[in-house]
Image (cartoon, rainbow, N blue to C red; front, side, top):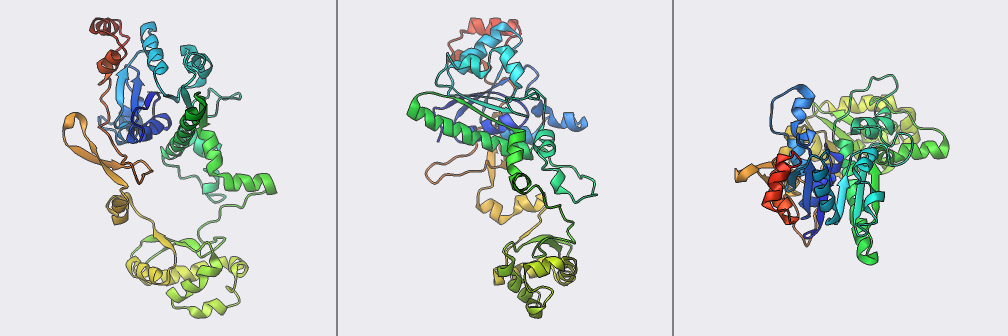
Length: 399
């Protein structure tokens, strides 16, 4: 798909490397510049809990198939190598803060005149303009908290339960990939590259755009209701007799309500004035939710599943990760892929990146790289001699 496209990645943690990881799965040659201590995501579990586990599945997901080169960009010699790498690239991808890139001379304004075909892909926490352009961010802060996404997840008066790391990062990574591909397409027509930029905050704002858009247009936002008082009881979570939670997906309530009444064998409820239409069901939401809770508690989920499907009543189980990785549908749609392990020592299973193509096979092209595994190879491709490589190593500029 992207064979022949060279990407130079100067990025750490998730949002930037995630975009590079998708491009690598699509066949691009992604050269990852790392500091001597490596991308900190390599040591994620040590950062989180002080664990000594050397493996990091989150790092592996976003970095498989890349080539790692270690350059200490505090050294002028290493910085010159990095600039040479970028000058020969189709895409330069970074999630370093704008000020840090400008100090290195790796900002768009500096690089663009000498590299007119370069697609410069930037992902930041808070954007390239404004007083907080250089504020540090993780997705928990910029994507979830600052965008308002976390606030609307919980009913009023309920303490936040926390959010899962990497979620907003990966949405932002996919966003950046779409921009990179658009810029590469435009370059084929115009011959010129351009800056492509997104941020965790901007992506989070878009993801919660329904609520923010309503606030902007109507000046209000509907509160997040507790499960026992939903706006639409036919679009809600319920629990079966065997303690399995599931979603009813009756967004089009007038279409789905009669089917639900048949499933629970209470067809008389369709004509009940308390539940005859969406407005009536909203007025009596607590009572109808309690009624449905009692009904669903009488059978196991497998029984309900058969009844739902027979009526074409839309639903989905709330699955554990154990269930997800063994889900036949996840396997059938190639949601889990096999990745070669380090040094050709077997393989391991991992999550697939989120797109497939009818005419081109995409997926992991190789293992996650060891730190600095490809330094010598990449330097030789730049025309650096073995003597010069030895000097760079002696100076601590490369490893």
